[in-house]
Image (cartoon, rainbow over all chains, first blue to last red; front, side, top):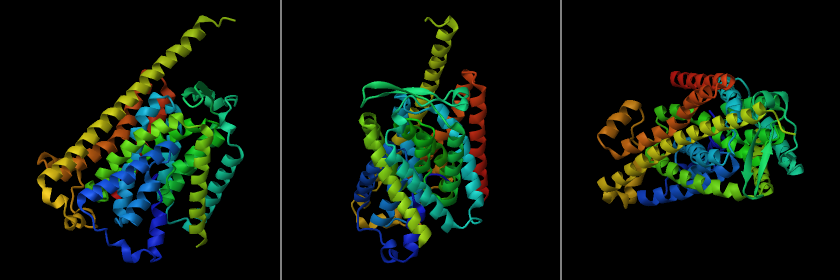
Length: 306
Length: 142
């Protein structure tokens, strides 16, 4: 439903026959080697996902399918497990650091979960091609905005709106890179809520991770600091992923021999990632996130135009 | 310059309750994560102990990870496999604990917000829980 990484992209490539020949042949490895490689990939996915607030799916799905030629079903199943593991693993540290804003997460979660159900119901009614184009353009615009105004959200002076005050969305966190307490407020809350709904619909429709919309929505629109946006997105995606994970588990898509090493690796990666985020300069994080936005935007536009 | 007393008390009381809420959430995540990691690790080690020769043979990998691999994937399967101490059953049980943790976290947040007498957020959290439940039922039916 939410945050499955980019399975659609991989399916598309496979459907075009470019990978057909290798797709069914898993590499010549012993189970120990396989577990070790999967673990190593997952540590990377956990670091990446916990720092950027995207979950690990964006790394796990391509790595498992393209590198290890694992069946796409098992890859998506493992990717959902990786999203949950990143969310919980990083959540322990981020809640303690007060980077996670629990109220913001609960408020926006109402919109993402509802949106995701709506998206799942709308799937098949709306043409995918236009969706990819629109989604690609939205992400490209978000990348442009993040590039143009890298420090917009860093200013603590942003005024709160009525909703933000009424729902007590303000907070503060200690930024280890700046060595000071950074207070912040939420503004344009209705827009943030609307965009979270869109994030839910898009992830329900396209199976693309919602974090890629949630982080810009919280950072650029609601004016939350990028670290808070990333940590809060991380926190949220675990819940939506858990709902779909139950379905995938019962369907037999979560293979313990693949998802097991993935889960352990991702948790290790997430624990490393939380230390990195704490000390990372906000501008570096914003540049990294912009790069990922550009990358995913190009993929989506490519899919829409093909 | 001094704010009235009520203004001094109110934020610190609210902040204190928010801390309690945060520590509740953290504890749920910690316990769920630890339990699932222990189960997955034990299951993987057990697999190695039971099938030591297949661990180092590349011929045994396809049966484990290729499409059509056999492993427990319903609640009954997992429960019986885990109680038989089968390796894949224990790993699967660990993954189920991992999956259940965020949902449990939301459910306990309802209690946390109720303790804070924050009824707006009790409502919002219950709404999320209901949608999650609904999506699960819809998915299961379809």
